[in-house]
Length: 230
Image (tube, rainbow, N blue to C red; front, side, top):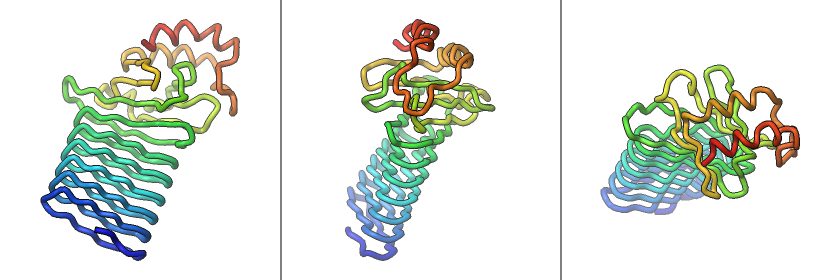
């Protein structure tokens, strides 16, 4: 089903639907089934509802809700809000200042270069669940900077304005993502994050455009970074 250039309301059925809003501020509802929803241009509302859905907001300030199921959610350009709800979801805000909240399940938050300043809210105390902050290719473990800011954890890519702020990290373990992963296979678990926070607190974050740690930083931090990213 394809919408018009105006503000459309598109509804799926209890089957595997494909809905494309096109231009305009659209509202797309997948209903049950494994649906594919594309907002296109405009400030769109996408609701996957039940099933393993694929949601792509397109350009604009979009609101995406995955619903029950293992959903793949892409905000694209614009300041988007992504809610995963129950299931093992992947939330990729894309370019813009996005708000990401995956809900229950083993979820993945994606950050790449040029994405901007995203905010993550986790609140899942289920034993054994593992949520992941996944960094795309071109971001190494020695290019990721950790700071304690109020009750939050700020995780930034050095030399850029790209960062994840994880709300309430210091208020309890249920607010953590359990792992940070780089594309080249390195993993940092949440219980080792504070070691890096404390080590990096002695320094100012590297300046804008500084894509590698300065030699003095490497001398002081290199061993600690290597020991905790495995």
